[in-house]
Image (cartoon, rainbow, N blue to C red):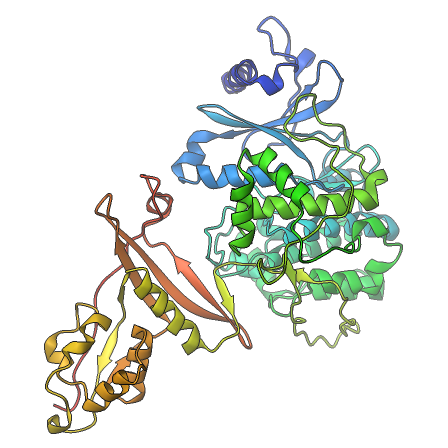
Length: 587
């Protein structure tokens, strides 16, 4: 253990000597004792134990946490972590631990963060027991405000628990490690069973697909229960039994809990994520609204929706060392997950919060010379035109929930909007229309596609055209001339009228006419040859129904992260199966 601690101190000395931003920090001298410079936390947290350092000039303390670069490199997500950390450095919320600077060395990432002296909420509850109703409400309001802030900026925690909620000197909640556990693949539903099992949602421990925000709501419900009861709602030393309890969603409600807060717990700890309460439902709940400070959920200021905020663009350029053209292209590109677009919205949102809640910012000032300037400008931000860039938030349907006990009637929805999560491409168009556009895009991008097919024809051979070579451009190589000869003259006539501008239209019409049937028209695999490396860019596309009239097109890598990141700096590459399955009927 001593050698491990010594190695971490050695790496810290190297980082401090090699990075200008920390030259003013006290250096760990080989002749000085640990207590003179650093002290180690008693709890092991995410990655490594944080070191607490003191700024030599200002006296402000910071927490320095080490992330091992080799472990990150083994997942081949170094670039993604860098982008997410850049955005986390812009997070400025009174109840989220601030990330001031990240130092990159050949072996580690050193994260310089805000230091709070009150310790973990977990330790506080263990020492003092359950919290009074009013105090629990105050802390819970702060936690929900922080979670809402991050969800609106498309960051999900997935490991919310009292150990990750810190307390400052004034007993205010600060969420730590936000965003470091959400390394999700773009365009994918999450399936990773990360986080602590006692606080994990049923869909997480079951390995089912989930979008992200709803698992944080479940964890917040468990935290609220722990605050009010001083115990866990689902607990057992035998892990399979614990999982069974969580999946069943049955928990004990003590008599000292009011009917109102018991109702809120029931709504948040719903096993079905579609019936689970949302941030909007929580905010409108009668128990939550009592004594709610205005600064936690500030109103959006008036702004000109047709104007892009030039000041925010310039600040984004400064933070990311890029040109204004790059930022403008990101905003107009319509991708809300683009790191420059996210940073732009964060800067605007930070202004809004700081303008309405500057007196509530209780954290220490950042170290001198650090990356982040605390003095963000105060004028209200101007957001881009909604037709040119998708809004950060949008209305969402109210979850369906039918609980008879405890008067679980849903409150009227707020006028606020819920975050719009872009995991893949969402659309309310008809499934056929969505896939038709997908096939058309694949054709324009010069992709090959593979779909499992069943071949059928209802009539006699005399009714079938002897050649359909005209369709060769629309069909994959597995469809031979013998198969083409089974296509009818009627299909040729339809094609001459322009009905087959894309392969999907062609195949779908074949299916409707019972000549060629697609086994699963909503799941295909595509590939394109890289002209530089000669390897194939390959991926799988599948359409999911995520709501009553809402669909999501998921892009999935089969090769994994290594191919997806692209060793040559080119576009992502993946691998797929290229087999067909077809048969002739009625011969």
